Every structure is written in C-alpha cells, then in structure tokens.
Length: 306
Image 1: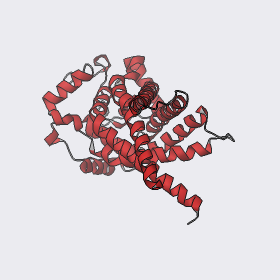
Image 2 (image 1 turned 90 degrees about the vertical axis):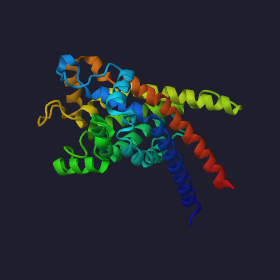
Image 3 (image 1 turned 120 degrees about the horizontal axis):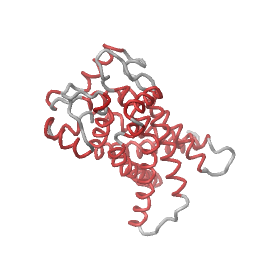
Image 4 (image 1 turned 30 degrees about the horizontal axis):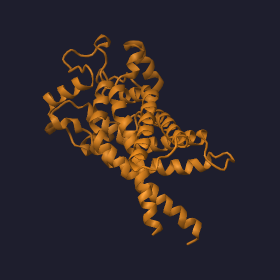
C-alpha cells in the first residue's frame, strides 16, 4: 500500500474513532436538555391557539417537573435511541468531513485560515444534516409524545408508521430536510470556525489542567454562539417535523415559511423558543465533543506511532 494512502486511511480512522466517541459521550449526557428544547419549541403560545387541555410548559425547569410528574422520570430520555444510533456515525462523519473540507478550502494558503475553518464547518454541517435528518424526524416524533414511558411506541414502530403513512421523501421520513441543513450548516460554520480560530490565538498551557480548561472554555463559547445564531432554523425544524396544530392539516411546510408564521402569530421572540435548554446543552455539549475529540485523537495518534 502506498505510504500516502496508508497515512490518509490512518488519519481517517483516527478522525472517525475520535468523532464517534465525542458524539456518543455528548448525547448520553445532554439528551434530556435536547428533549426539553423540543417540547418548548413545539408548543404554540396560548394566544396563538394552544389547546387549553394540553400541558403548557413555562420554561426549562417547569417542563422537567411536569414531565417527571405526568410521564415519569425516565421520560426525559424519550427518543434517545435514534440519536444514540446516529450520533456515533454522525459525529464521526462530521469530524472526518470537516478535516477533508479543510483541505479543499485552503485557497492556496499553506495553513488553514478562519475562513477555511468556517467553510469547512459549513460543509461538514450540510453533509451531516443530509445523513441524520430521518433520525431527527423519528426523534422529534418520539419527543413530542406525552404519554407515560410504557405507552410510548418504539423507535422502530414510529419509523414504520412514518414510512407507511408518508414514505421516505420530503413529506415523510425526510420531512424538514432543508431546515435541518440550515440548522446544522450554520451551527457548524460558527462552531468550528470560532473554536479553531480562537484556539490558534489563545496560547496553550503546559499545565494539563489549565490546557483542559482552555479548550473547554473555547468549546463552550463556540457551542453557545452557534446555538444562538441557528435556533430559528431549529424552531422551524421542530414545527415542520412535529405534530401539526390541527390533525390532517399541514400548517408548517417550508423553513422560512414556518419562521414567518411563528414570528407573525407568536412574535419574533418565539423563533428563540428553547434557547435556554439548547445553550445549556450545546454550550457544555459543544465543549465536551471538541475536548473528547482532541484527547481521543491524540491518544489514537500516540497509539499508531508506537
């Protein structure tokens, strides 16, 4: 095997291994906040016609309390199987494609620039979104279910139901694809662009604890900024993929159309529903992923060099 090909495959294997590990750890820790975010995004404001008989959540901790009381404590992990199944390959693909896109967007420079990191992040996010959207559709459907845990259908049952009723296309298992592309593309453009640009500016520490905190801090800010900027796409995605307000009538169809409807009926601030749990998840979650990736990649690199 040519040495260049062997080196490429070795690096790809390390990127896949480190990225997969980062995704698995992050989703296991942070999934409850993702569920709370989805519940908050799915509910319309009372003035916009939310049914009085439906449980209404007044924030993150109110949502957690009401879910635990009416659906059981383990309801906070509803819909975790789809992300567990997809997060390992999803993050593996994201970090792998980010490294490959980075080479493409050098534009003749001998080293990556902030523009390189941002465009590579955008490309990785779009690629990731196309692969994971069917899992996102199933996850949102499960997260929207307010029955007790024992009464919630299985992941496979929900998947079959969506396929049987609407197929695999943009009205079925791939509903909300454009919104997912917008959400993931914008997030990763900021996430990778900020993290790698700032990490190259802020000096490294020789002390391992200080260096760990440096990476965590930059990763936290990266995840927070990405969450704040991309959340209107996330709200639109949840509305498109979740249950429609009136059964049998599709209210939320397109990404920007859904944003306009939400802003018009519920106010511009409604496009930022779920921001608190999203930041609570993707601030530390973003830090977890990047730090786990860096350390696992370094471990694998040392292992292959032995």
